[in-house]
Length: 109
Image (spheres, rainbow, N blue to C red):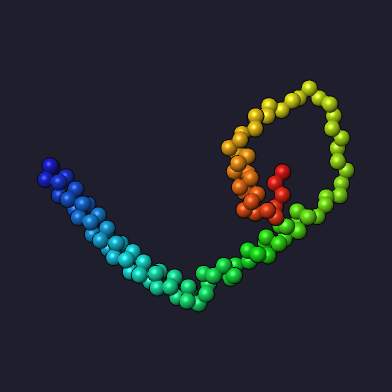
């Protein structure tokens, strides 16, 4: 019985090795074609940022920010609730100022 168990274990180990080698070869072949496809798409200009519609989405976001919301604002009611706000962090203010310098068109607030 021990020989049968050892024979089955060795057979599964060899089958696993065969499948590993087979799928490794398939992966190399598809990897080769994938790299060629990426190079072809770059030559055709599909990797350029002007191909994507990023500028239009940014313009529409800026237009939405500039539009004023017309609606009734609810009046603030005096309540006993006081939010537990954190004290100002000078390091975070430094990073906010840097972000404002990088992109001065957006108002942070």
